[in-house]
Length: 395
Image (cartoon, rainbow, N blue to C red; front, side, top):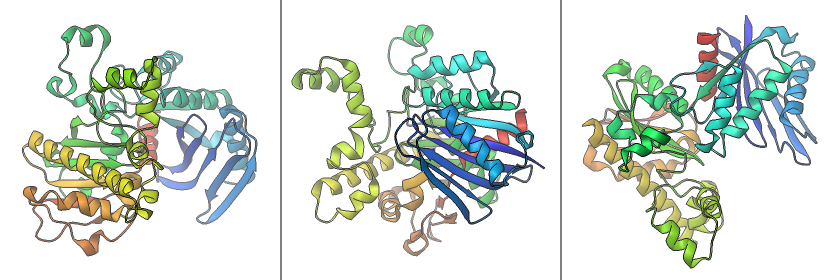
């Protein structure tokens, strides 16, 4: 038996799982938060119920990785670094450069950093995590797993924008899509639950979290997805606007005396979505708490649900039908009323939710009514497991 680690690095965080392979057993998981800030939070869950937590200043990702590996030994999770045979890293944007996961070379790492122009909030942090692990464990298999790779099966009519074609030919301006690792996992798991080959299914996967996207999956392949050139397009999200008329940008910049386009983009990325609509929070739980007495919280919730319904309807039309609708990620797995409201607005698809079955959080379950012509599935996503499997496949 040997160990692999699945890593999801943020700008100030490092989330991870350690697997015993090939059994795919999680033996430890954890997160380091507030890297580079005072009072960083360092936590590890292990041995099916034990926990290690401390608050300490952690200046860099390299220091976080060193501390993490030392604690794996101190807590007897591993005996020696040699037990770790592979580390896999989630990377947001692979553009057209990466149609599959790869064993990372220095050239690949530089390309990941260059592609930060597609995912400026994610790729720099992902690259930082890769370099941190390579510094401490230089000789093990290092794998990059891209959120965009799953969507490389989209046809041109789905990924091209209606702009001069030379902008694509010269600058690769197109829809890339994100959350591909999650959409791939839940679509494969849905086929297992339905006991049908994924190649025979038409699925709509709703990854609803602080970042959110919908993906049409036909025959196990991504047909179209709601995120676009960057992760800002598509649904209303926690702090991202989702789809807007681009003519709003110069109009608002003039009205608000905003001279720098980057400032406008920051507003659309970090101050919009649920946060901008409600005026107080990007967290769905906060909106639920104030839904009855706060009109703006209610409005934000209804707009979120409306955008998801529109994409489900559009993608059912794109595939000329749908066999199952999947809910996953933080909101999708836990927001009972949100799931109910979305499905209740899709009666024209002959889809019916079972209120009793839907009254659950974070568990794998079929939540559609017996009379429903479309299955509705709640499937907790497991991007880390997909990363671990790709390490196994490529190392």
